[in-house]
Each structure stands twice: as structure tokens, then as C-alpha cells.
Image 1 (cartoon, one colour):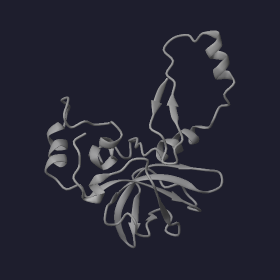
Image 2 (image 1 turned 90 degrees about the vertical axis):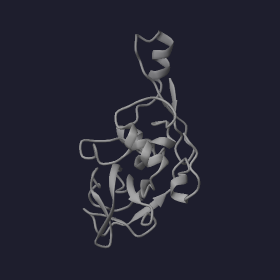
Image 3 (image 1 turned 45 degrees about the vertical axis):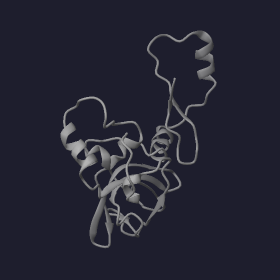
Amino acid sequence: MIRTMDTAEGMARYELWQTCDLDTSLQQALADIPAAPLADWQASEIAAGVASLTAATTESFVPQMLNWQHVGGIHFKKGCYTGQEVIARMHFLGQLKKSLFRYTCSDAGTLPAPGESLLDGDRSVGNVVNSVGFSDGHSEILAVVRHDAAEKSLVPESASDAVLSLRPLPYSVPEREKTDTPDT
């Protein structure tokens, strides 16, 4: 059992990884828990601000744009990995102009797809990273967006009449606030 990041609304989240047969009491305890649809887990990942790459978004973002430094996905003081020099340069010398934001959208008609542009008027200011739709017509979205455009009236490229509403993340993103960033 792994405790994962809470959602912005404070919901506790866990993952259970099974590597061997479960004893009878644990099997019974799990059988008593009602199954939830995959969309619920995907929505909780979005509400926790945890981005997942897809085929449409692979190689589109550096880790800092996905806020991975704030969710334990990257650490600037340990380890060696492919691309470390570029990532460290962005962290220590560069100015991050885009990062991950959470939005909700009602009545979009079609679910904004990963990689789809978000528009401010006719100008693309970001891209959808993850999205999940619900039967009531609303959707939850994680998108990498320019800091200077995140609070504007953004619309998905596929649904120009659907306006996005900015939602909170469960962690702060100092890069947006132009404050000193602690090494993580």
C-alpha cells in the first residue's frame, strides 16, 4: 500500500500493488470495497496535479513544465539521468514561462484530447496534458499553459464555446509567483 498525493480538495489517495497471493482476510477486505470506474482514478490524478504523458504528449514538455519537481518526480541534487544537463540548466539559470495548471470545463461537447491546444482568442497559449470526462458533461483537465495567460478566458481548440475555469492544485508552484525556488 502506497500513500500518494492528496487531491487539492484534501482527499487521501492510495495505490495497492499486489506482488503475491493475498491472504484470505485481505482478499475479503478488498472484496467489500466497491469498484470505481477508471475515470474516478484519472480525475483524482488530475485533482492531485500529477501529469501523465501519452503518445500525443511525449517529448512535448520538460519536467518542470509538468510540475514534477513539486510531486517528487525529479530531484535537482541527486542522481544522474539522460537530459540532466538541460533540466538542471532550466532550473538553475532559466526562466520557466509555462507550467501545469488544473481546469474544469462544463459543456465542452467533446473531451479535450492530450496535445490539443488551449486558445486565448486566436493565440495558442498551452496544451492539454490529461483530461477526463464525466456523464454530466463536465471534464477535468491538466494543461501546460503560459503563466501570463493561465487566468484568461481559455478555450479548447476543439470546443471554442466551452470556457475553462481555473482550479487549485494541492501544492504551490513558486516559479509562477516569481519567488525564489527552493532546491528540491
